[in-house]
Length: 79
Image (cartoon, rainbow, N blue to C red; front, top):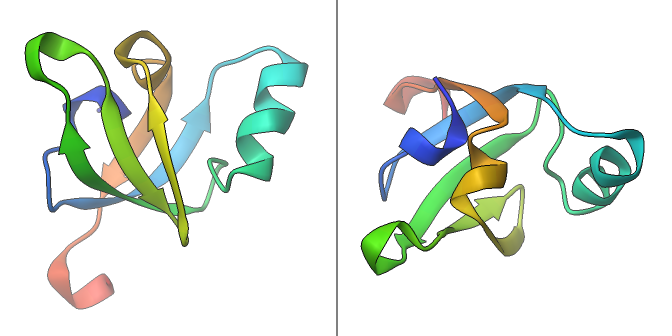
């Protein structure tokens, strides 16, 4: 499953980030890295983007970038 499929209110763990090293480093600085938890806060209409909380950092990502980030959903007990 990729990050673009995460619904508002769901939490997931990042399992992969498919990006060049510079972008991977920038995302890691924003807590978007393998092993980190992310929650979907809002989605833009018409597939415009997704607003996330990544271990306390709020950010928005384009859907095209979110599709390159693999996730695994986290159950309520694991939160």
